[in-house]
Length: 311
Image (cartoon, rainbow, N blue to C red; front, side, top):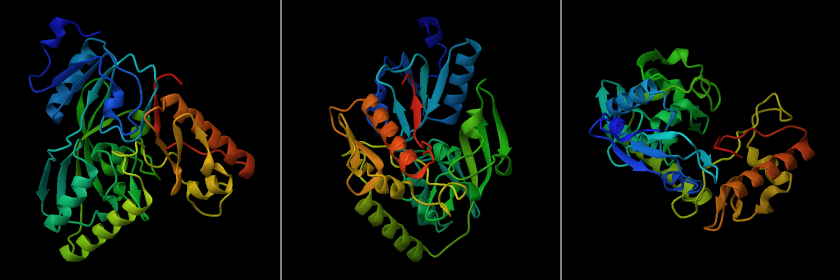
């Protein structure tokens, strides 16, 4: 683990939280602690910190806003580097393109590009998480996905080295990219966008935000991590990709409850929790949901949330 001498070698701009409770850093607001959490305010600080830990053989992982993580109640035994700019988005406009830091919130990216009239990312409106996490998971909605506009990314690898990779090499698929396998972290991305009419894009953003407000819980009020399972691929029992929530409702999962975890009353693919909930409650509820769909339809659901720690 990091000793006092090593702490003095960390970049001066980082902040260190020993024994951080990861429930304070995820939208599920669940999970145990980590030995140390290091807040990295920018890409340079993240690279320097990661390189230092890698050189010392200290295990670490990088997280953003924690909007797709379920951390076990026993926590984790490695250092967590947090790369999330909740109030300081970092964007640089280059004609019809934008260079954006990986720690910028996705909704901030959608809002700020719209305000400049440089591209319609309204479909990203209201989606929690950082740009880096969104690119790694190829986030999207309404038939669109962020990977379609990625020109290139600057990545941080496990050794603490940064390098530029063309978007075409990221293997974007539905809610996935090769970054999910390699563990590469998006330090920044160059997105190519098309200019649009600001009033039209603004109206579309407001429509989408209102739609989300009417159908999705606010994770700050009702802790959750959005859709728990990926939608169903055309090669499954469905003739085309269909919402996992539909299969869950048909399988009778809408009324499922385990401990302090239950399904959101307006969406069968979203788990919300009460203050008494544990991460184990959520995990057991997902297992119950998987079993119900398997029994009725004969195929298994694929988790969209990432499990961290021992379950």
